[in-house]
Length: 64
Image 1 (cartoon, rainbow, N blue to C red):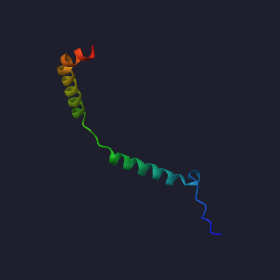
Image 2: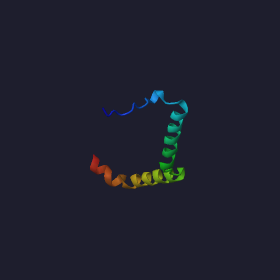
Image 3: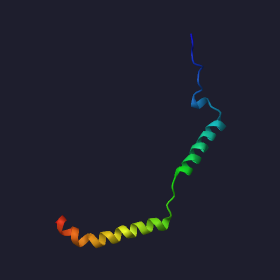
Image 4: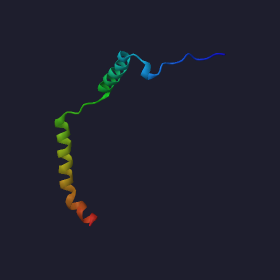
């Protein structure tokens, strides 16, 4: 019969190999993240707050 060779279970892997896989995943995750500067977030929140403040007189009568 043509059988596949037994694959090692994750718990049977050497400890160093496990950490290499974890480090690789963390490295890839770090590369893929797009960091948004804090001042950009503050400006966005401020702009949304201003927009809400400006639209409130027009939207409030519709909601009541």
